[in-house]
Length: 112
Image 1 (cartoon, rainbow, N blue to C red):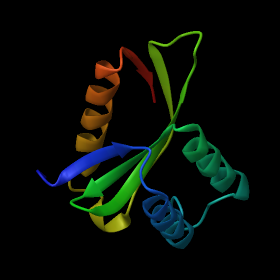
Image 2 (cartoon, rainbow, N blue to C red):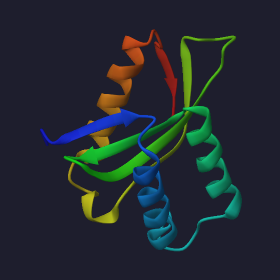
Image 3 (cartoon, helix red, strand yellow):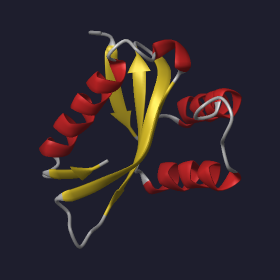
Image 4 (spheres, helix red, strand yellow):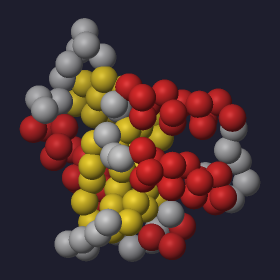
């Protein structure tokens, strides 16, 4: 798990790879609504998209909202990981990395 890391505002190519993957696998193998894809694009454009990596390979993402009126609060909107990485504790590690990065930014309250 030492290869697992996160990146805020990942390169566009990695964002596109993740969007292709979620279109293929969806959230539960069945559902992905067009407005969800629109939300991912908006989050990426707003800088509130965090990619999860295994080495250099993007394997998941989360989106969040951050209110300028309450800068100590972040709201996680979506969290998704490639199916082959699930059930291995990577989601828990992803959350730990996100919370640690948020703490460094002065965010002390996260709603998921």
